[in-house]
Length: 369
Image (cartoon, rainbow, N blue to C red; front, side, top):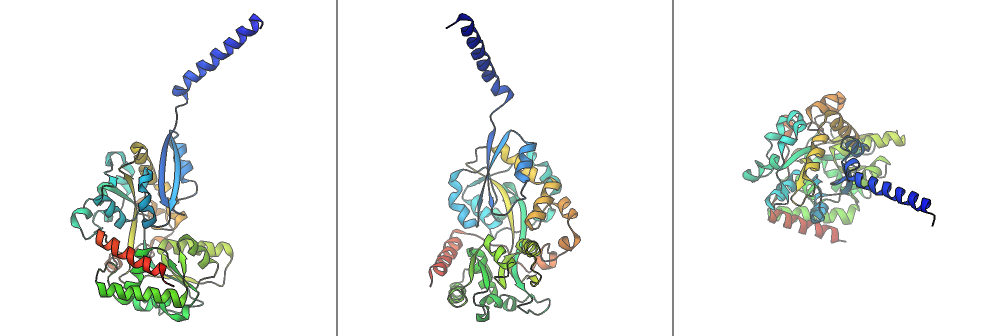
């Protein structure tokens, strides 16, 4: 080989090696940040905006449908998870999540609605008092009934659970109702309909709820699911469904997009039903704690919080974001209950015994013919 050619090749190789040596300084390897959230529960461009503001992170975004399907996957290693408050309480007890560094969450300190400091998150006072050490409210909602008022008539302004939930248990609703494939919501609706607490551990009451749900399944043939129910309601395939309040807003948007002018979709909240708050927290096996703090704080930027609330439809705990909402939304007592309405609702409680019993009941319902 010609000496001059060898010199050129050697010089080129040296340049390549020098450039590679500079890469760690000029182009540092990104840190992976793994987020585990509910499906359809974040604005489409939120992750991209976060990565633009924090270019050191590469977000891996994964989803689940219920708290119960999330729980067995925690060993997979996530940096931020967003379970509901009753699951947060369980995770605290089981040491699945770790304390947050509030010094790294200035947006949360500034904009979180103070009411979340006084919420009773569980009947265990010690655990309830620790919730905000481990978790930050992301979005919240109530559980009620959505129904097409052109097909179903309910008394005006009724809050009677026996009247409202009867739509889901009356044989006239055969093949036209939706039920969440989620044990707490579905068992809770049955208990509420029967006049019992949605946290009941009374054997006779639970048996009555079980019998009701099995009868509903065999006689009414409900559609089970979570995200798929929104599309079925919006398309007019279902006349009524159990629904989180945020899903009602999403359904209204989809009905408008589909041009379904023949659907008059209403949402009603039964007394004694559930209100719940989904919360951002950090598992003990998290690999990127600082990234998790940056993500949680970013989600409390008022503009980001507003965009997520507006896109998802659920209620925001961010006071500045709430002020940006249409008054028809922020003033709706079903989406943003006042103290009087809150006093009639329950959060889900949790314990090993309750989780075991409710899982047993729901598995029995799902296995029934």
